[in-house]
Image (cartoon, rainbow, N blue to C red; front, side, top):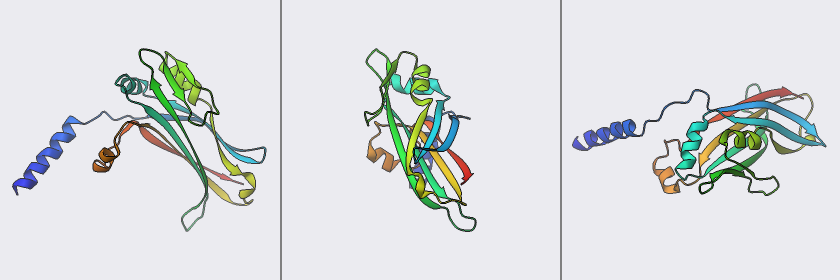
Length: 186
């Protein structure tokens, strides 16, 4: 009985200590488009991080953040689960250089690095117009309804895996994640 009381007190205390303010709209999305470009399924969108102050505070503490965008295209069905078709993902790192500018870089090296002292402007330049390639357009069959799901999160990269495993119920993202869905017919 004493152990239950101690655990309950610990959980209530940790809830009070680690309680963070809620964010109403954390990650905004603009211009979500699925189209055919040179025979490829392209997803074009823009990401707008609403809580720039929370991101700035995390970076000033020395944390390394990453914007992770994952698009999944599936065929929508009425009475069964949707059939997952294709997916693609992109990740970009956001860091604050020592006493210097903010920098956003992509690991694939195909895109340029974005640098500047105004965090909101750097994020807008780097994430305001993004795209993902979901594969060959011929994989889509005419006469079907499709669902595009776009999951976006701004996560902390420097959290130890054992911490994530131990506190699996805790959200370690710098800004709460967002998920968007677009249904369309082809």
